[in-house]
Image (cartoon, rainbow, N blue to C red; front, side, top):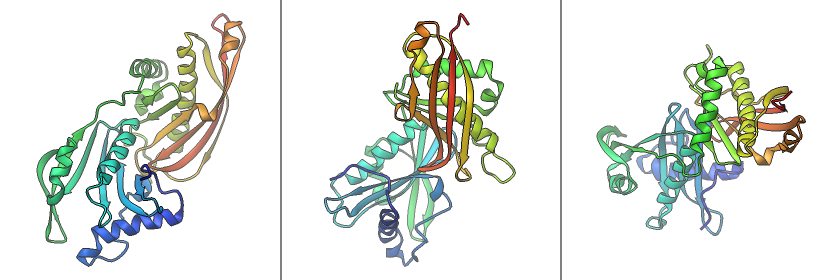
Amino acid sequence: MNACIAPQSPKQLQAYYLLRWQMLRKPWQQEQGSEKDEFEQQAIHRMCLDENDQVVAVGRLHKTGQFSAEIRFMAVAGGQQGKGLGKQIIASLEAEARKLGVTEISLNARENALAFYSRLGYQNLGFSHVLFGTIRHDKMVKSLEVDSRHKLALAQELQTTWHQTIPMSRAMDIRVCFYDGREMITHCDPAFNKNLHHTMFAGSIYTLATLTGWGYVYMQLREQGLEGDIVLAEGNIRYLAPIKGPAYAKASTEHASGEVSPLTRGKRARFQIEVVVACGDKAAASFTGHYVVLPKSA
């Protein structure tokens, strides 16, 4: 059995939605299309494939706030229950949620799924709603611990530096939600950064991307016990899509170049960092920043 993945092609995405409809809507005479809602473009989508690349389990997570998220549309294909697929989907969605700074996940569970979610650590808060006039749902919640790979002390140090020296970062509530030495993910307050169209300000997107690249360089210096004054020499951004939900920005060693070693010789260090700003699985902006680190003595 393959690991959980995001749909990689239009064909896979179509199969993903088809299974969702077949298991969650068709038995109650609901039309195709009813298996989707307004949050599809803001969500994390995961599915499991069998040895024939057929979709056998699906699930979705979307952030409802800077630190909260909801799981919806969990489904396992007929004849595939009892194989741990649902648990695998939940584990994958929770792992993504932790990296995106989520501290609490909620979901609405059908009566026949209450025991399943309870075993996975979800607490039943009681009645939520009735779907199609017959299907009772209870609301369930789970608190998430910080990802064990996250270097919390370094992240908090960077956040303090930002908030004390860059007022806009404090107003936007920009935070490091994940950093493991190779990848850094940041997020900000979605409510503060909305414009009159209820999408994220272009200026906020640019600021989040710029500071994520700056922060990634800062972390590389700290990992080596070095100091320097980091300045943005050049920044270029492409806006790919509007951001309607909570956004995050990501930088990683795969999309970064530069060395800190010149600083040890009293010279400038240069970095090029590529940052993606996204909402759910969808990239909404692509930023390339050229940063220069000046030796403290300069």
